[in-house]
Image (cartoon, rainbow over all chains, first blue to last red; front, side):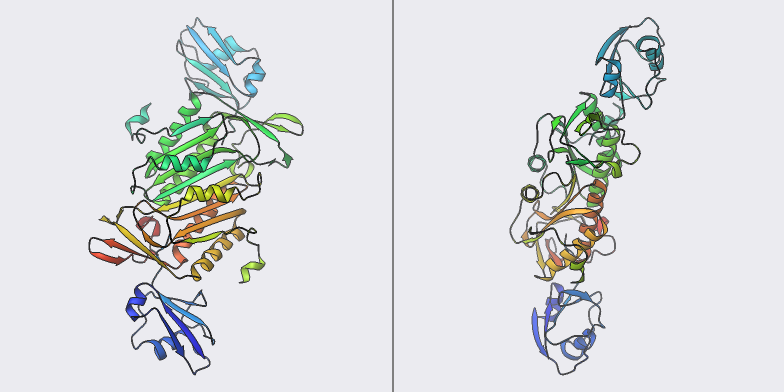
Length: 78
Length: 78
Length: 162
Length: 162
């Protein structure tokens, strides 16, 4: 299945890119599994927030084919 | 001494006038004394508010010559 | 006028305005803010009270607001000065209608500028709450029974009235 | 999108607007309010957040606001829908800047219309508080040390930031 991954703000600079398309073979993949298995060898930076399909979720959320997964630092709008 | 007396809203209708000039001979006159001695034979209507020189005060406040004393019902602005 | 010694009112502007004609609160906000020093405040909170066409389940078609000229301005200034002494407020504006008012016309505008949004919210809310309790205005409504004075709002102003 | 079943967003209007150009919050308020049904609401409370020229004792000369297009609008709509479910709110408007911002430019406008001022104050304050905690915006400031991301504001947003 194909997963779209996005990075914002300091997380984009940390990863060196804004967006990736990832081809994944596993069927019950969590966000945490995605990070460690496909995106980085390092730990997820402290306080990183995760959204799947533009809704906040935690690292144990299971990803489906076509999902958009985003990683970003704490928000500072308003 | 001369006292200026003003009435507003339902108090104006109750008294039948908006303003009176009262000539007073006493020297240590309170608002309460003014009401009973010079303005009305009836009791002050319940919840009536009093201001002397445009500042709230209670019935025991002492009036000086030239003061403006106002009587009015609870306020309903805003 | 003891409060003048605590903290000066922000200089030069008319902070408290009584209007006998309809006013546009958003135009007033924009005009007033353009007179403030740029970059000094970070938050503005405003309250606008508008005449509704319903009140206590009766249809209200018109209203007259009587006031005590002179004391009205003084009492609102006292209310605002107390808020200035309590909260970190940079500036404020209060505009209040008097006279004949028809539904959907603004009755009151209270705006507070501050460095921080908490002070702006607290200050604005306190000013409108105190103004409603203390400023000498009286509403008389044209309702189905005829002309009637709006009664005391000291019990629960927020539940009974706007 | 479970919330759509609870209470519908007020019909027809754009309630959540992301702007990449400067905007006049008071003109936006006036325009939006003129689209509302006359006489139905009695209270409006608005918050405007403005870029200050000081922050944490450092002079800040410019700022860039990055956001997550799509999620920003959805998350603000969720925040507003939660406030609609909790308070007696008739309508609301949120406008938020993105892109390059200079001191004294508005960053955010939150406005709430209600029959009662308590609901308007509570609703407006909750929307801006939740927006600051949840909407995916990130501020990067041009400060004396160079470009720096503004850090987390979850500890005490009201004390640390506007």
